[in-house]
Length: 583
Image 1 (cartoon, rainbow, N blue to C red):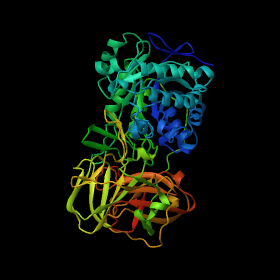
Image 2: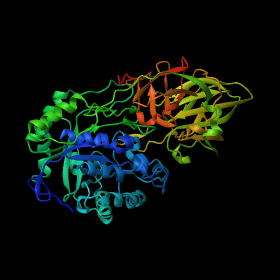
Image 3: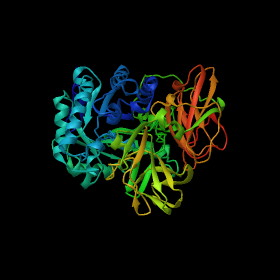
């Protein structure tokens, strides 16, 4: 058993001064078979601690149903860290930000009507039940129990959102009730607003930033004059949105800032050390104002010390040199990186319009009014709406709050695609038959993960009007797209433009290896490899042009590649290439 203490002059582990040299690795963004490889590289760099968030929305995807297996096995992740002699810092939510879907909050919360991230009794009841399932799993890995965990965070950058001390104290008390006896801490931005709202008087405080450490720490000192300094998130890179350029930060600038903090005696956590991938529908979004929506790309490469694939970068070597020059070295080793492989062309041989798969992939509902995904218990994917419209002539279709991208058909004829950031209405459409059908299919692109617009319901969140007349009587189909094997494709590969279509092809592989999906002839869609959702592409938006396929998703023999293309496939093939392109 060990002790970890925060005294006025330093951290102390078993009575000896300790400078925390940490790196963020999110277990839920990496296949479990690679956890040890990534952690070995962290230890070999000279770092002594790994930090991770915990995503509530995956651990409790459906209310009262908890999942801690596979990629969500946090206990196995902590065991692996301990095996390598690493200590661990855990940031257990309920909110994590992390450019993660809904900031880690589960979608079903939006159906409860509770106010998020405060002492609303309903919200506290849900968090409390989740903590009762989660925290004991972490508690048994505390250093005081012989494990690697030295500290837990309360909430996350709460001062940039709220100031409810009752809520923060509830989280702290709930952790203690579930057996946490290591120190708790908060992390916030370096300004008066954030450091007053997000902290508790008796709890250790840290700050997050990417540059100018003296200035940032001077601000922290106003609220915590003694105690050791720590940057819990040293932003050594950055994340990407669609429609942006790929973000980078120079190796020298990163290393110099890192050294400056170490020379000050500060402890540091690289955010990120290894970013990994927003597999499936887990990428979040920013929403600086209600009318501007900025979804995050699939890659969480972050331009950090290990690439998205876990490869050593020049930034890793530059930061390791800083530590080596200070006499901090490690005898931990790891296997050399294996280069990605070009497996060549995959020809699509099967297809099916998504609208033909409503019964295979969806759950039908009938409602007088339009409902959001959350209203109907849907977490992710696509939602489909259909109604009948009388002979009313030419009118625009008003869809208030399209979240996030909608295809529209009248009488089975494609009319328009409506994007959330544009006016949520079509041009004039003709309803000139005695009875007309109006169909709308909406793709969710990720719930907001930061700022005041967190309550980001998906689908269409208000009633739909043709002209100024609201339309009632809706057939709604929720397609979570969590099991694509249920789709029934025909042995012909073809696609009609602007008809969302499933396309499938097969490739034989002798030896699995890392590779990248590239579909230059495609426009926008989702990719599954052997049934595993590797994420979204959006070639028209950039910057990301390839999707990472870890070797662990491939198998010897025949492999299946399935694509849901929303807009147009100009040819019936894609490439599995060895060249990454993040823009």
